[in-house]
Length: 237
Ligand code: CA
Image (cartoon, rainbow, N blue to C red; front, side, top):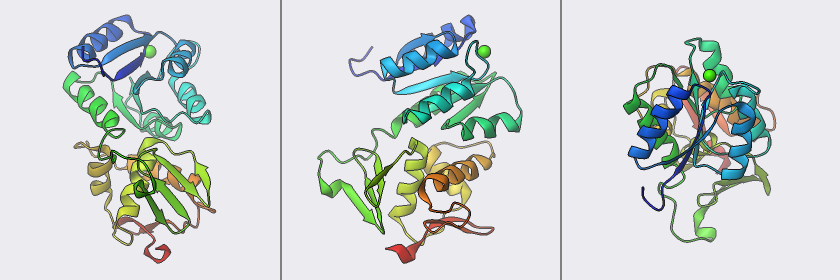
């Protein structure tokens, strides 16, 4: 295993799934650790500071939604990929609203799962400048986006964004006024071909607005071009 292997925390109560995930993650160069229920998962997430969490939805003690909500409430922005056995749309939307970055439905194919793990971890590394300092900050309106620390401040106050929310905002802010279709956002922010559930984009934007806007119902930063997509308000620059 590489010395700088990324740690993946598996929170799952089905032994057989844990074993197959551990085996395949280790083979792909990750350092897997495991927790068998929601409480143990929460503890491991706090103490081991993993690079990604694979979080089963149906768990003893605390379910996946609750684990996710608690971590986000503590300001933990670790990428969370939720495993759900159910096909229900409602689960997916609930998972995303509880703060998960992504979800995958069981039974999943291992190559697809590994691709999603990679895509969701990748963001901490990709295109972050090597040096620190103001050059790594983008100031846009009353927002300051720190590309290295992955921190966004609004009028000096830090916003608690998850990674996907941060990536979305950074993409929007990189091209104020440019309208991004949901397909384009899915490809650029989620990094892989998706199987058509564009509600993931809408839900994440709704969450981002909830944190970013003074009034999420009347957004002034991230605007909607009806029937086309979303864009950053060019008048703020
Ligand atoms: Ca389970």
